[in-house]
Amino acid sequence: MHGFFARHYDLVMDLLFLGTYRHFLRAVLARMELKLGDGVLDLGSGTGRNACLMTKMVGPTGRVLGVDTGEEMLRQSRSRCRGYPQVGFLKARIERPLNLDAEFDKACLFFVFHGFENDSKEQIIANAYKALKPGGALWILDYSEFDLGKVWRPLRWAFTRVECELALEFLELDLEGMLRSAGFADFRSYPFYRGYLRLLEAHK
Ligand SMILES: C[S@@+](CC[C@H](N)C(=O)[O-])C[C@H]1O[C@@H](n2cnc3c(N)ncnc32)[C@H](O)[C@@H]1O
Image 1 (cartoon, rainbow, N blue to C red):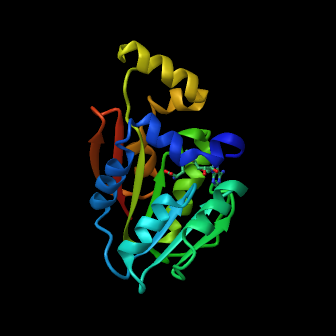
Image 2: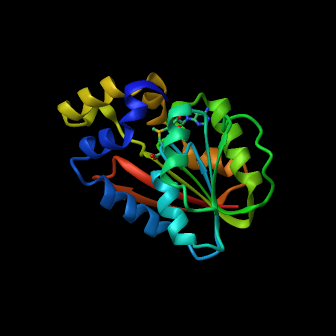
């Protein structure tokens, strides 16, 4: 992500969610039950807003690693999280093999996953699986499965203007099935915003 949208990503999200984004994010992070000392891998870490909140939750004995490709996103995240030595940001593509082996208690993909082709999605899931310790959990926050044709017209209009073609396909994806094929199990799903968004928890 780059340009105007990258520079003002947080503001755009706050406006898009009519000022509720901050509370929503806190509710999502509460579900992740981050503990002091946890290691967290944030794939597609954006402006570092989430990584910074998570860093405070895992404390000085924990660790957060954000991975992103966007220069502007990495610049904002590094600036925002300066002062927290336990957080780092890596410039890498999350659909390419990452050199991370069983190091993390938790991994997350927030509003990232829907933008990839299915073979890249499989590689991202494989990366997350490999990076997690046995028993570790992956958290995917994204669109739920829903029928866009039945959605309130203004919302449908906004969705098709803002989102890419892959996001439309994502609405029909059997995400649990894809995760199960990669070895994940023990799923839990938490709906948000009338069920249009979902936080999916899956365990290694
Ligand atoms: C919609 S933003 C979400 C950011 C963050 N997860 C959040 O919830 O605030 C998607 C992020 O994924 C990053 N991204 C897109 N493709 C990527 C890739 N192939 N590898 C790593 N990061 C990628 C973008 O640069 C952007 O920061």
